[in-house]
Length: 367
Length: 258
Ligand code: HEM
Picture 1 (tube, rainbow over the protein chains, first blue to last red):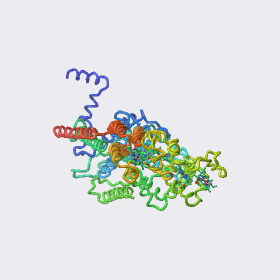
Picture 2: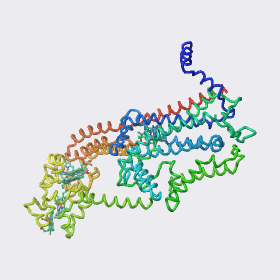
Picture 3: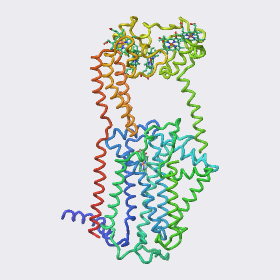
Picture 4: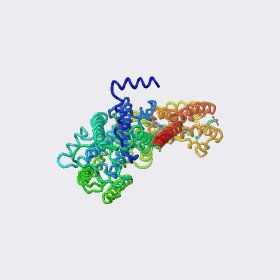
């Protein structure tokens, strides 16, 4: 014990850690009615780190070449000790990451946490969602199997319907007329370099913003649930009667992270084929189109929407409008009420949109 | 996009169809000319087209000789045309490609009785309609015209067991494939084991078949354990259970502190 204390002192006199710990313990108190939904952000951080670690391990053996990619992934699965597990953690983890991002977003939506002064938190988070979708799309091509090849062909094909520049843009994206060697190079660079770095930077921004404003007060268990922010000067919201981040909320984070890991491992060990159907065990063949080309679940709604409209450009425009609206939501919804039941129109609309999205996803799955 | 995919398909289908059909049936005058002939002369083409040989590009000239590229002199002796082979020639013609089997056959009681009522390759497999051989071809109808079925049945019973194991492994390979496990080496090994076991029949030597079948079965037994994922479930249960216990533990500590 004595030794530990000495070590702590040794570090403290050099870096002032005690100040940081004390601040976490009593300085920056969290709202007393904070709930479990607030731990999803920490879960997301853990997920991102897990993706990085498993991704780097996969990179040790993965070969980004159209003749070798499929074999190298098979080699990882079969020959490398724990390779199968690592790949499954990475592949299943990417799906779970999007799921948790959506849950995180929904909770913020219903608790009104995006309202001033947190518009930029929302906006940076929205871009994180886009980037997460992007990194999944680019990663999906890398195993170079039938599913990934054709899903990428179809996905990149959408871009061609953009007027005037569409076909040039597709060629830029694919590095040629068809999905091929150059597409793999591009997607690989995006997937392991550009996108992870951008995501890390954006997560940093996201956290910095949260650090400056403090977390929002959940609108539950209070008399007055309107937004208290005045908008005249900067204040970091403090809660004199609140609870400390360490250890109280850290424990909540740990509970959620453990539950998340239990879910993840359940899928990895018991239902891996839910995320990796057997068609993905066939090497990509540009000459044979599989009968059902379906994207990953998180793109099914987009896919179905595109099919619903007579012309692709209309379908794309509708989706772009919906996404823009979502991105700008905090600037459009200026009401001060945060409790979901006290702003029924908003809540019903949001639930309606989520149900529509789920409906389109299911429709896309079975169409 | 919806119009593009079928369009792509069509183009690819056309492009890919050209070289493929060319590879299966090279321009072959025997097939074209005999295909237009009637009865005895045309029938072989119709039957041959359904055979495993046609599938693998083994054409008329492989057995009858002659020049399939020269319409005028295709059936000239000078070009190696042999006409309709007689029984005694057949094993050596087939044996040009199926060497091991021809050797087994030659040494067997059937081969030794060649020309004296012993069956040739085509007695059992046919000449033009050769299909993939199965153990079911050892049956009373095929084997009793010349002698009893006792020894035949004994051989069949020994081979049945090997065959069953081969089937089980084939199913297993499909299953493994669906789990994304590489099966190339396994498939190659299975292929050669399958050939060995199916060729072995032609020796008609019960002791040899019994002994070799035991070898093959031991070999197959070894392959059966490949890719078994038996421990996955229990490790999975442990891992998930461990995470849940951690969650519970953190929950209890938190309750204590709150
Ligand atoms: C720097 C971090 C990362 C690195 C170095 C990395 C690396 C890789 C590599 C080498 C592969 C190909 C091998 C395979 O398919 O299993 C891959 C696949 C994949 N990655 Fe990543 N990755 C990273 C982060 C992420 C993140 C954050 C996500 C999702 C949000 C993601 C989603 C995917 C997906 C969906 C696949 C295809 C999975 C499959 O079907 O196999 N990756 N990654």
